[in-house]
Image 1 (spheres, rainbow, N blue to C red):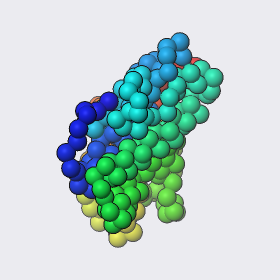
Image 2 (image 1 turned 180 degrees about the horizontal axis):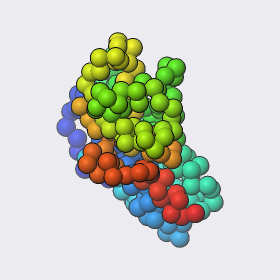
Image 3 (image 1 turned 45 degrees about the vertical axis):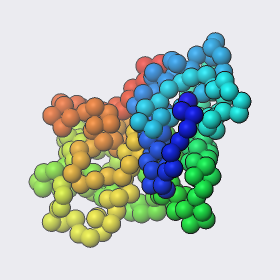
Length: 255
């Protein structure tokens, strides 16, 4: 998968490599799930899911050289595709993907002679991100503070500030408000809301919520997504009565 030689890298560079590969694999298992599902044909040979440093992914055969230049992902994920429920299969691939990412990161750590402090720093940086499994299954957003709906992005209009306390499934009149991004600062939100904003994670990339980004909520699985991750603009969201994320749309299409 990679070249034969590597120049010395810092902890930050290895973490950047980790984040790029992780983002690619998350795309395969969420926004690109239909393409990923089709490429994992059980009639083909043993296939692996690779995350690439440039935030893309590919399904390919394992490396031919022994031992391989990098640790290899789980082999034969395509064989289990039709023998399991899709949700369970994707969760299984996600677990193996998490294990592979850690293996690659600490392979680099050993190769570049990271000491105890460097390894600890690398693990801490990795551990601050939700796992791929958490992103795919939707458990990443289930953090301790769940006493209000203030953790989710809301309308940019102050006149719709009441949507901050709406139930997970909004009414039709609230739907558009729930699809709009949260303002940078609401006069009634208070410090508590600011503390909880970071708990909201994108269902596609797994990154935290930021005040200046447009988000949209899936009306089926109730997960939030960056508009850019699911290719939805604020203008387009205004005309959507019921939004279905790529994963939910693909599941219904195959039923």
